Amino acid sequence: QVQLVESGGGLVQPGGSLRLSCAVSGSIFSILAMGWSRQAPGKQRELVATTTSGGSTNYADSVKGRFTISRDNAKNTVYLQMNSLKPEDTAVYYCNAFIPDSGFRSWGRGTQVTVSS
Image: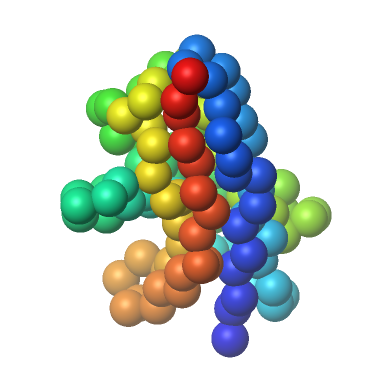
């Protein structure tokens, strides 16, 4: 069983930055692929960024050049650095862990990010 706990959300002005963290329990973090998704009110959840167990990354077009996903295997933690934030980035951000082609996926409870002046 893998548990994920997100932190770092909050209220920020347009153009500002936030760093989200996701702490993962258990001993298999190093083999997990990790991702961040978000869901705005009235919208479907969308994938924001992923990182493989080897550290390769992928981003949604809407956040490329502004967001950076990274992982620290020693701390069982994945991060999402968000810069140049826009009001349309407002959403609940969810961390997830998965093993590709295995059917395994686990989600955190989410952290709210609000971008507003």
